Image 1 (tube, one colour):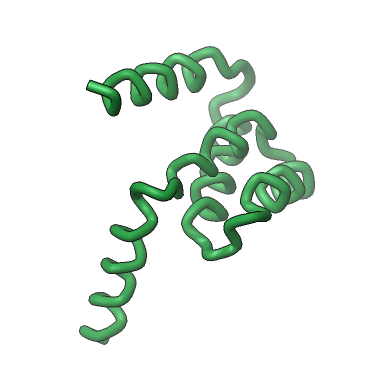
Image 2: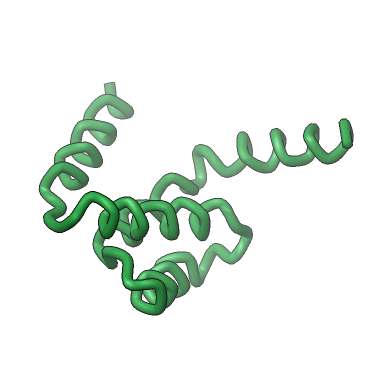
Length: 87
């Protein structure tokens, strides 16, 4: 139930972003990319800086960072470890 509420709030915020789809998509991609890196205390700062540098949506980058939260990070790290062991 809690996850459904969080997902709904996230999608509502994402739908309210304005601008060209390419602009918003670029910001979201930057945010998700930075969100899965192990630089925990600096995720939002790095994402905002890169969104500014690459002319992407800063609010979308800030939202994208939330894909790498404490609940999903163990899944990302486990998948990365298994992929590394296969290679």
